[in-house]
Length: 281
Length: 329
Image (cartoon, rainbow over all chains, first blue to last red; front, top):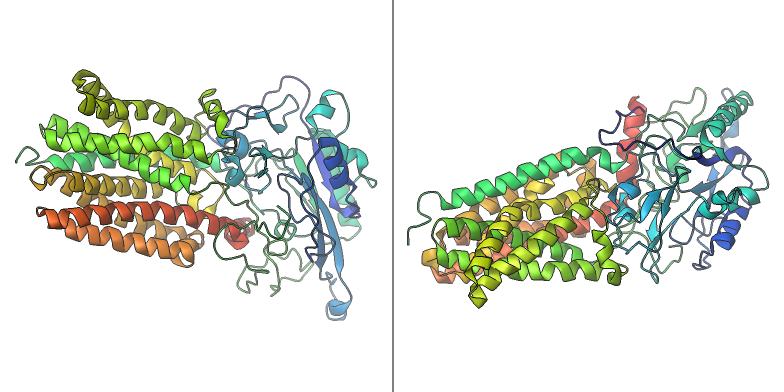
């Protein structure tokens, strides 16, 4: 759905290299988790528990401080085509896989609310935490509409995907995209990726895959478009993604206005308290 | 966050494993071509997991909301009392404000993941970050309030007057910016309350400031404190009611679960304190009234704080309204 432009939206700088991002084409993801492993290896992300979650082949659960790529495994009922609806009812599952990652939003709530400036927008227009500045206030954690960024408990600071900022500065492909054996994770200039994704979507739709759609490729959405967007084969929420995320700071002017009015009400309450007889006894 | 003994959803009820919502409008996504009939088993999230991350804030934060709000409203009360010539009330309100202001900084620093880096808060001033704005506000308010109180204790009246004037002017902002701070998140029970929550917090702060001043001031001088407490309690109760009415699905934590019990306790405490304050000319009524009002104010902050955790843990609170928006278009 379309959202009005955010009133206080900071201009995204056009200076420097072009905006880089990910296009994650889940229609060719095979669930190998090479992206998860490569990310952990390259970025030195600590081990965070080996648990069997009983959620298909997924044992990492969700993105977090120590999981910057997360492969979701969905066992969805088959989608019957018209005419064979009844027959298809019990004919197995659609096994969907999708590698989730930080969306590197155009209007990033985490960056907006960060009080130290630790979160910043890089020359590639990605969103990165400067670990030497973060003081672990935790404000970005509930601000993110995707539940991506989180605090590393033993460390106190917050962590998330950097879109391999260090590799980008050396003209290298991010570790997850490099490791992906099926080109499900594609890295490149965002506008090129969008063109490629539109072509891919047309192809997938032509092949008769129901429910295929692009998620996060629209600059008019609630976060101004994602730097890392997806081709999904089912509704976003079944992958654990919000269907219509909105950057919380869009409403910040209204919040400050309300706070101003409430502060004025407090002044009024104090004034009323002293009307007729503050001096008396 | 993947370990089983470190559950994501924070305190409160665990999220439903799968949300079956037969009434949810079918978008036709999964039903494919021609299948517009709603599937009964459409999940609203990934294996029932929350969409959002729970806040990592500890209970220092609602304690600060209370202490900072109390200090802010007390400073404004003190300044007004001083202007009205009620020196006895002005003095006790200044001292209450000093205590609240002195507690505020340590509470906030204690909550940081890296407390030793608290000064990093002062390396930027960001209007898009209520926490940044609040840090600067507190950095101006707390020394002013402490100077005002110190003026009473040490007999430096000029410093005290200057500090008292500054703190009195900054005080109202101290009571309401914390509502913006929690509203400026993705958590539905906080974000969607952004119009009413500042009024809840302003009323709550006024009730606490009036109540504590009633306890610390001889009843003969405490009439404005009683009135402030009454007006504040009415504002707190009225704004809370309006907030709960307007929140819709996002207001669920305020209606059921652990947070709702805190909401009820807060309301009972505040209402009882307000009724007792009517008889506050007698010391025997003024002291319990003040204690109940302050307790109600603290419980209100704890309730709102807890409601945010429950809201974040509930994927349907996040997905429901968004799905409806998408399906309408």
